[in-house]
Image 1 (cartoon, rainbow, N blue to C red):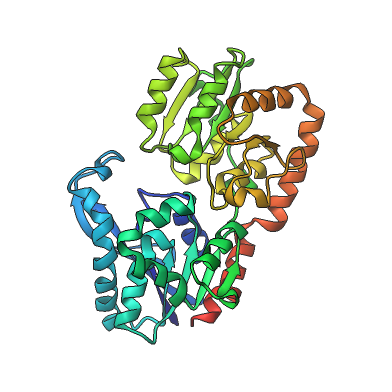
Image 2 (cartoon, one colour; image 1 turned 45 degrees about the vertical axis):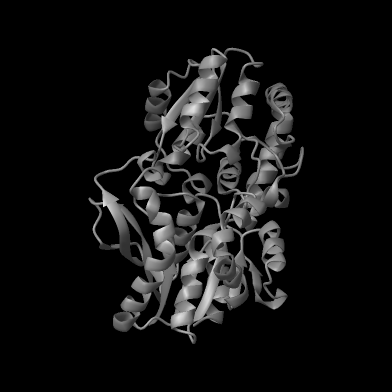
Length: 393
């Protein structure tokens, strides 16, 4: 069986964002390739080697006991990201002596492109696939990676195939020097639990009780990292101008948590902004199902898995068209479009949704059908096997 070594800065069970979910959903559906991974450990309670799904994970790096999100940004754990750039390829080469990998696959240029380039220097004949899933603004990423500029840029140039999840990221790859014939567009998919919800009514009722959702309450929801990019501050500002029965459920964790809590306190919205914290991906669909409107006025997006998952559940979506969102967010067709940094437009969109149930049904049905047809993981995995992995093994 062919073997592919994955470089990914983070992975299950403790870190699951769009990129990690993509690896899991894809690899679990491909049974004729053996996948391995070098990733960071962080938590000394995690084994150094573990198989999750169809991936044999090899963990490296500095560790402490059960660190939280804030700990990852403090010494010594914040040294892990720069150390990974150089320790990961060395670990990969050592593993190759035993497992004889046929190719390598890097998840995101800014976090795992450099290890792949170094690995290629040490093993020039190895084929290399690079996936672009970045959600941060590309100019910000380029500035951040400037100290490793030569290696970073070569990730785009040396890759035998660059898989992008949106045309937005495809254009970035071209600007970085990737040849047109080496770019493959393969979108991400929606959370399968949202495409095919199986939650019991009793479980959903318990969740409503947990957050004290009353019959007249309307829950706005966002199921994404609490990061500046996701613009939850704009949604909180909009909430201040909406009726008191409208509340905001934020599902996730991140470095903006305290800032958002302070903003809610400043606007006297502590009882209307609910911080659910980090939730396992297998459970997130339930939080969407007890909610009424998905609101995420992103400042930047690579594609937007959470938006697709909300559409899969026929939730009305309020979003910008930044980055990859422009490929499936269409005003009054699949979603309600707002400009970035525009709380007043969020207010208008929410009121429009609540006032027009017939229009909402038409738009959410259209969005649902789009996701079923174009953004499901079975199709994604097939395209990855046919268009990406076939080129490197």
